[in-house]
Image (cartoon, rainbow, N blue to C red):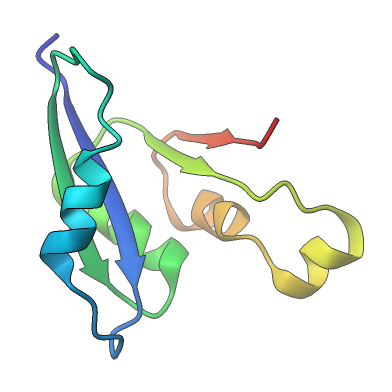
Length: 100
């Protein structure tokens, strides 16, 4: 009940976005009645996996949860996987959620 949840959105360094609007959208993902403190962060970085690992370390999180597109085979090899790179970029536990 005293846990903190950090929702992080990574954007490229040079991309102009409305941080406040993105944070508002991220906070809207919080389930109704949630008792945990939820914080939203817009973080800039060119390498999403590395930026996520650094952000998690800075925030002192216990576990990182990330979604996967569920690609496999050639597509996964060509496009790459942020989740795979994140697993190699951090020593923290990583929970990868795959689409249904």
